[in-house]
Amino acid sequence: MTRIAFLLVAVAAVTGVVASMAPASGHADDEAVPIFGIKIPPGYRDWRLISVAHEEGNLHSFAAVLGNDVAIKAYREGKLPYPDGTIIAALHYSHVPSEENDKVFGNPQSFVPGPRMTRIAFMLVAVVTVAGVVAFMAPAHGRADGEAAPIFVTTIPPGYRDWRLISVAREEGSLDDIRAVLGNDAGIKAHREGKLPFPEGTIIVRIAWSFDSSRENNDIFCKLNPASCGHPQSYVAGPPKNGVQFMVKDSKKYASTGGWGFAQFDDGKPADEGVLKTCYPCHQAIKARDFVFTRYAP
Picture 1 (tube, rainbow, N blue to C red):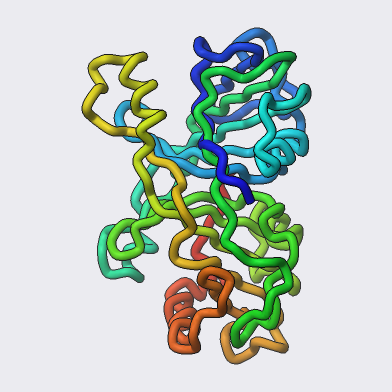
Picture 2 (cartoon, rainbow, N blue to C red; picture 1 turned 120 degrees about the vertical axis):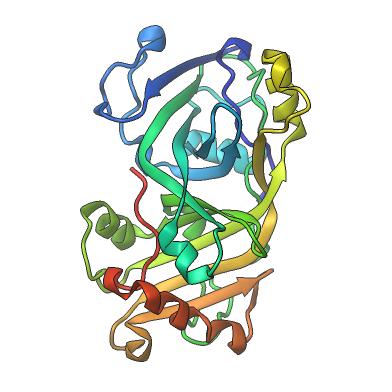
């Protein structure tokens, strides 16, 4: 997958783009939003993931950037200018520590989205080139779908990078990454309905990237607000880090590990057995939620 750049919506700086921002939650998909009278595109929460980010300073938020089919195709092909019909959505969540996760890690290092979305920003490409879009599509992890997998799970589920977003997170300490958690159709439906235990066939994937300061984005913040100069606040997804991890629900096949099969791939290669044996003991701490740490971010 081509590396493109993480999206920063700077409404006043965008040429050829119609932008709109909606407040946190409480809008139906087709309800009008404040700027330019544009309506929230229906079904945007089911769009595919472009990348993730964390903004410090006054914003102090997580961001997950999603794209409609036109946008995803353009990002993956590295196509500029973005074609007509491209829509990019930036979902911003409050950035809060996870006491639940920190108890497992034994250190205060885990941050997750808060209970509310703080704002939604949209960019709709109208006619000409996008200017003022500072971009990165989080790179792929160097593997082909269906490549052989480690013990517990026999193959990498095909097309997982097209699955829908469950949530985002930031891990400090030795992990030091920014991550996204995606789910197949069964996984998304169960998360949205709060259904426990998760149904058979649920697959959850955690993708992680290095947590990199964005000089491009910080330069823009500096120009917009000189008081922020010299104080980096924008962090984006860098190269893949800490492997790609899967949980596959099959209560019969994986009865000895709570009904879940676990897998991790590092640079497309299966992690060794010693790594995999740590998965289930860690997830036992969250047995009450069917061994799944991640909560759905609306």
